[in-house]
Image (cartoon, rainbow, N blue to C red; front, side, top):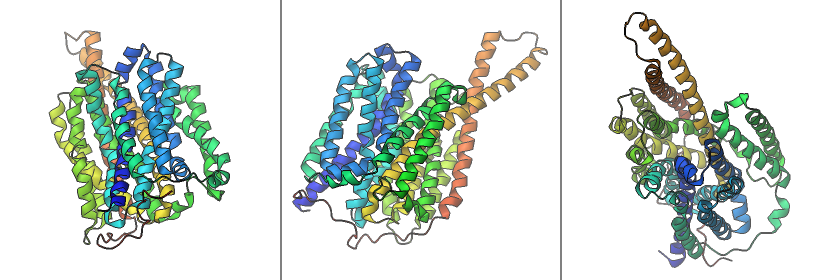
Length: 508
């Protein structure tokens, strides 16, 4: 391999590390929130805003990251954002004022939120067809590997090392390595100042504010009981209205941040719709086992880690294996997509059988099915959707799909959590009615406090089972939609790519 390509690939590796760092940064902070709250002396309600602040910054940055990277140069923009992330991580454990913590966590979310879109943009814009699917498989790791690995990392910092500060400091070594690779491998390019005069600044302001308000509504809605809270009501209504303004200005603007017109293409419009619901079903492999083990069995993150790693570790191999499969001439990516959804549905139906006697070992079958089904669904969907765009359209696709990814993950977690609350109340009332009826026939009834504890315990187990059932049915309903996508022939890995050439370090 030539020196120029070696340096370019090193730059791409740096972007991959930065994207993984960003995914771990938000998730580990949320998982270890109880320990952070105790160390900083924050209340439960106050500390919950730390996750909201990071998620808000992350979602706000995603539609605009690719535009700023092209304008300022990928190298310059990435290094600036990495520097902000690392500096914020170093300072966060030493702050105790809530307003400063929230401001710094939000800023870190903005900087981290730029990393994942850049990975997809570079994969689509610069990688040749012969390896582009492997680039998409690496991008898929941010949705299938990083969230699961976060459970193990959170356990390491809070249960093994007993130093909660590494919840934030963990990204500093990764940021340093990623920055070194990008500084050496990516080209030095001038700032394209002319683009600043062309951008849709009038649309960016309501778009950023609208996305931020939607994050507040989705992330705090369950805790504040949705429309019973004026804050959630105003945030949701205002966020949707401002987002609509942003989308309208983007549609008609000559130089938009995200080109909405590309959604008229079947595989993009329908594919992204399926992807949004797929993100909801993926909570069955992360949120549901963690919720059950933490609340029913009292597990700490380190004790839950083996269940999460059952899904996480195989992704390092299976993503590329799926990419290799999609290169085969006899393979229809729609069938691979549908098969992945079917395996996720089977995983949900296996998890639906849980009882209050389940521990980690009983989740092995469900998590093993998730481990195989998730990369099949995600990588095949990315291939089918991105194959209908030109390399120069990569920034528009990157902004769209990553905004949907962040929004879908937040919405999925909120919907599933609220569903479990509603079903838990329903089951609790039913069990209480049965217990009241049985009390008349049984001379020695249980003490009220013990009875309520048992009912609460069982209603939570039943609500998790209901969530598994609903998510399994949703995965099955997505299969016909996946099969309706337009057929895309496997790319010819032996021919030269039609993509733009890899960036040369000598440019600029």
